[in-house]
Length: 240
Ligand SMILES: Cc1ncc(C[n+]2csc(CCOP(=O)(O)OP(=O)(O)O)c2C)c(N)n1
Image (cartoon, rainbow, N blue to C red; front, side, top):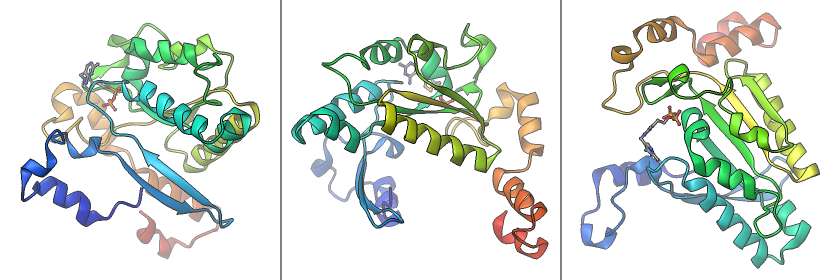
């Protein structure tokens, strides 16, 4: 989002005068932000990150409401839906387990709620806090709820950097062309615990043995680039 580090750290330290920040006592990674980005083609994109409460999934309908309101303020109709795109990042357990995900997906193609299609990115770390998938859902994929819609669902290997970029481009282009939701199931893993207080090896010792021995994605990509001759072996440490 381009948020300055000083601003982030000052939020951790807390304000000098707390009364100026009443009702803003949330954890820092829930805070919203907005900024402008220039694309390589020289076009300005305004990016707005919605404040995200602890209640899993609740931000999703809030994003839809905010986007639809913005589209309506911009004249509504196909043009506004094309220009303003909702993107929602979910957890795998939340996407599978929260009923409001189904409710909001169900709204997606109704005239009164349509936002021209939402790009969903599920950060599928194969754990819901400490719960493994086999104890968290009955569907094979965490995207089971999205199968109610006639939309593409991509399952992509998070260790394959170029596949991830490819799928992201494909998903956005599909949304811009067909104006339906698109779901990306980014199959990956979580290197550390759910939060500062969680030691994941206590609850998932075998999984974390594998994760700790697994090379990080930057190393894998550096090796892939070196094997293809795009970088030399000497450059790899800078990448990994
Ligand atoms: C509605 C709701 N129910 C339960 C919780 C407690 N809770 C916090 S994180 C979590 C697991 C989330 O798993 P996932 O969606 O896979 O996200 P992850 O943190 O693993 O990336 C749960 C159940 C919550 N915050 N909100």
